[in-house]
Image (cartoon, rainbow, N blue to C red; front, top):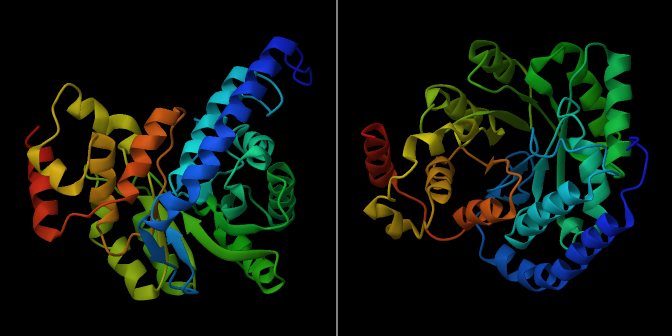
Length: 313
């Protein structure tokens, strides 16, 4: 099928039925879930966000937003579970294939999407190319402006940060930041945090990879930066480690019925963390993730127990 061809009528009908069937469910559960969720303030403004967001790397790269109806319906269900569970922040990037186009197709059809906190990135060298890329992302998402624009993996950050500051001053975006992942370039990242005034920083942190505790998390608290945590499941690696193993007894103390919720609560319990952004292509996994927004977080003693139990596996 050509890229610009419509899906067959039967596929369109299945997608439409799935979307309409979930509307009522999302509308009824949204307010209640958001009301008792864990929220965190943004140091730059005092605005509050739910402490769980959603990433889109790999999981939303499923065509141009007009093709595979089954894949779109599955991602619609993921988004519906996200908003119904109290989520707001969705993070993407031009380097994530078709993810931005898919979001632009699905978000207008979703109950709760009016509460969206839209975060994406600039990922190209040069001011002109960066401005053009950001304009294209805005077109794909179908938004009047982004809430957060981040320099992806520090690519040409010295060029892009002045552009982002100008855009923020003009009201074309609300917040700006920088990102890294996989534990890369922490020295450079920390130097930029000390030198520049940033609203957000984004980096990797999870129970298996805690390098950020040594320097980046304390520095974010010191500098007044909101922290977005990527790869909170280590790209799925944490689940391979616990496969077939029962949840530890202390999971019940935190109201956790899944390893996903337990891993996320470990991350969210760090006081410098604003929001974690796990990615998934399955609605049932999204519901497990969003459960971590509710109930108690581990204190320092319980986090040590969690860490000891994980390292003993």
